[in-house]
Amino acid sequence: MLHIFTLTWNGLDKMKRLHESLIPTLEGIDYIWHIKDNGSADGSKEFLDGIKSEKIIPYYTGHNKDSFAKGMNYLYAESKAKDSDLILLLNNDIVFGDKESIKEMMKLMTDDVGIVGARLLYTDSNLLQHAGVIFSRRYNYLPYHYKHKKESDEETEQNRDMQAVTAALALTRGKEFGNIWTNKDGSRGMDEGFFWCFDDVDACLSIKYKQNKRVVYCGKTKIYHEESASLKKNPVNKLMSPHNVGYFRKKWGGVYKKDD
Image (cartoon, rainbow, N blue to C red; front, side, top):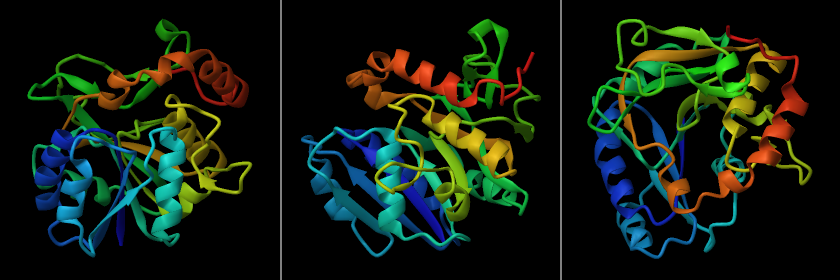
């Protein structure tokens, strides 16, 4: 079973585009799409109610106060995903450019792999939004996208091992997701100590260095990403940046490798 987790807030147009491009990619896959709407007031609820089915389940919280990590953990708990089930973390500002990308990612989920990321391009372009996450001197050894805003090329279209990938679109399993972290309230999954930044990198480092599973980047995908669409409307990640940087360094300093 493939469980898909998506958060949305006032993203009606994005959800329509995502729905239209996602469904054809799922042909032949046993899936359930779990969508958490965070109090949208733009007609999103009516749209989600219209597509609701056994395979598409919307949840309505009535507010937009939860972080990305908390939202994903909510959907993980609601899904009751088994350890062996696949979980696809999927932003609402994604558009699939082919029908094979998810299947290409699934091919890489061997027993020794804990999470698979994807090549993401800026909307209607060949510019890279994501080709894996690196830790380099240029960004003071904090995580950043490899070859960000460069033209996609033969190198970035190859599969490779990385230390981290973005959760804008990432494939993992129930077991690995549930073992990333246990929060103070007992919820399992992503570390809710992060607020809209570094929570996905933290998840990857946990999977790689604590669960001893590989983190793999899939370069065979054709997927478009607007990049942080919701945060452009509500930039809480910038407000929490000092906290996130300090917490990340305290938790992972000396563990991850410098990619220089």
